[in-house]
Amino acid sequence: MKLSFEKTILLGFALSLTLLAAIGYVSFKTGKRFVESADMIDHTHRVMESLSAILQDVKNGESSARGYIISNDDDFLEMFSAAGLQRIADQKKLEALVSDNPIQTKRAKQLDSSSIARLQRLNEFILTQKREGLNATSGITRSKVGRNMMAHVSQLVTEMQDEEKGLLTLRSEKLRTSASLNGIVNFLGTLGALILLTAIYFLLRIEIKRRNRAEGAIKNSDYFTTAILENIPNMIFVKDAPSLRFLRFNKAGEDLLGYSSKDLLGKNDYDLFPVEQANFFTEKDRAAMKSETAVTVNEEPIKTRFKGERWLRTHKITIMDDKGDPLYLVGISEDITDIKKQQDAVLQLNQELEAFSYSVAHDLRAPLNGMNGLARLFEENYADKLDTEGIQMLSMLRRTSQSLSTLIQDLLEFAKLGRQEIVRIKVDMNELGTLALKEASSTFEGNKPEIRFSEVPPSEGDKAMLKLVLINLFSNALKYSSKTATPVIEFGALDKGGKVIYFVRDNGVGFDQQYSDKLFRVFQRLHQQNEFDGTGLGLAIVERIVVKHGGHVWAEGEPGKGATFYFNLS
Image 1 (cartoon, one colour):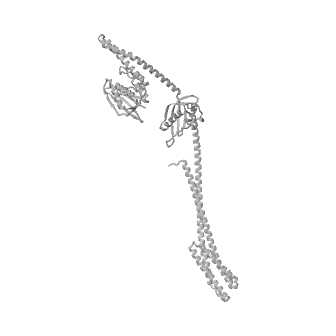
Image 2 (tube, one colour; image 1 turned 180 degrees about the vertical axis):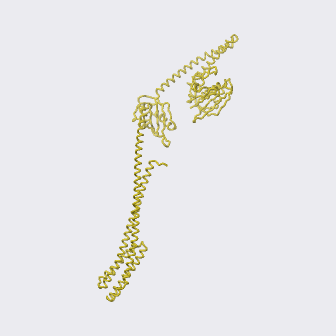
Image 3 (cartoon, helix red, strand yellow; image 1 turned 120 degrees about the vertical axis):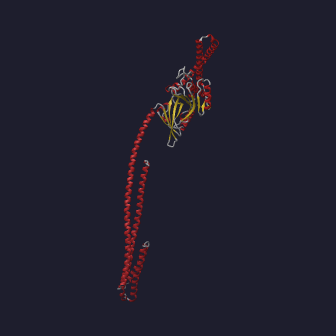
């Protein structure tokens, strides 16, 4: 697993601190051992000094006793007594110093006994001298017993001093070893820490250079992005998602609203627009932040500072953080005021044309019906007076007037759809399909097709209009499959991304796909009138109703292999 740069630096500092802490700990322990060793060395020297002092006390006692015996001077008696007392003090000091060493403690007791024995023998000489005179002790002083006792005392002192010297050598060697180890640990630890810190320094330098380059690239990118944003002709703004306060505006936005960025940044819609308008913007913003995709508000009225009321088409995109929560709201607004005015003008013109067409068609229907009635009466009452050619011409006149009457009726229906409001309800498309097919088949005289209905989901819309859509699609399928030996008509639905798409399919004559865009135009036909009759308005009516519902209709076909008409509803 590759460590991040931050973790690498943190690990390097941790190792460096660990090494320095280890060096400090080892130094502390070594220093402590130094102090302990120094104390032990001092202890050894004090033991050896005490041994020397005891040996000297015994020797002083021996010298004082000999001096008295030789001179019979009482001053030597005081010196002898002082030497004995001093030996007792030095003996206690020695025993206290060697109390932690059993061997030396044993030897100290032996030294005490030997020292006491030697001094007691000397004291006996002094007492004898006092009682019997000088001649009484002359033989005793020449005896080897005293020299042997003194030699034993000296031997014990030497043994104890040798023991202490041995301990001193071991402790000194141990101290030197600790000092050497401490030196090695300090050197290696310090070297390791320096190497780590040096490596961290160079890593930091490399990272700083990399970040400087990245910062430079970001600045260049930001300059590039800012240059693009400032030169886009549409208004672009960025809002803070939680508070919906403006964070950024481009120049087109400033020009449109009539405010500079410093007047806009940090404010929300309620600071800039009327309450009703601010409520509208805020509602759309909240809805956009709940959506997983970009949201388009096709028409937004906005009060500007100098340009009056303008109409915008705004695309709103939510920028999420790494947890999936809204972070920013980005808006791209296009000023469609002029387009809307043109659309409104076109809509008004279309309404006027539709009203005119409706009026003309309505006015034409009465004389056409009259002509058709007179032609029928003429045929019924005077057919026997006409020759064959006359009867054919009269029949052609009736068919033409009937066709024209049907066309006018379809035009009236088409015009009526433009003004008719949608009444949305939940519609059972299975039931509606059955009713529409029955009505479309009632006037059909061709080959009876095989009907294949699949279960389809319900929809919402104007039931009468949707029925007219299905009647026209079924009539179209019946008509164009009528010359097929075994016609088949299907009605079903598809699910594409959660959106229901209904379809009507036939196995009739089909059409060339490159002309599919003409199918839904008024009076556009892909087949001659003598092949299949019709007014060319049925599919145009279908498209008008579907679009009025906010949906889309399209067709797929192939010559000789039938056609499929699809539509969805919003």
